[in-house]
Length: 293
Image (tube, rainbow, N blue to C red; front, side, top):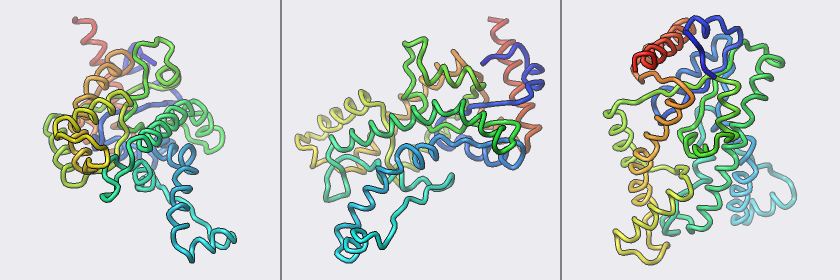
């Protein structure tokens, strides 16, 4: 969705914005702030965890519980109930399920099982993004919200086929929302990398990219057996490469289908009026740049 001017955006009666970018640029903070106004916050990660991967997550918990004799007995008699308590702020059950590949003695998963869970996440993310038009309608018709904000995960750029003009994900988003890329400065990128080195966590990777960096890691460290890979060491190896891999993809999305604002600009937003003013500003700025090029 494109606008001829910021004024046209401001006159849009039922605004719908999709924000994307790397972790920590302010997408969720922005969403929480707008949620206090007349904006419905749709978290793609929350939708994945509660709708499309919830059964997989709970089944994992049950398998672990079945290893404990008392819990096994209670589960088989339907005496206890196990569920996943995912919230907007706590996606740990989803991350735990995704896991990390490598040495099982260090909590790692066999690579084939890891890839299977990655594929489940990919399917779930695509489905959650395709749900956006439905939830735009639900937000207004059921809950009475006038406006809609879609908070995408950092892996939005991994589930779009840039070579397909009719790619269903980007078609759904651009048909029903305006896309805003929140750009991070290089110092933020370095902060993310350093933070990840201290606390490696599960991530989603595009399948071909994952296979390549897995192969490269094993070759660089002279490892033949997947089970000899340290899960945290591989995750650290992969994360910096993942960040560098995603940055140009974010750029392609913004250039072809959306608009961009800096992380600092988004951090200065204090209320709905500030946000709408920023959106109008980035639209006019991009139009001016296009006219001058």
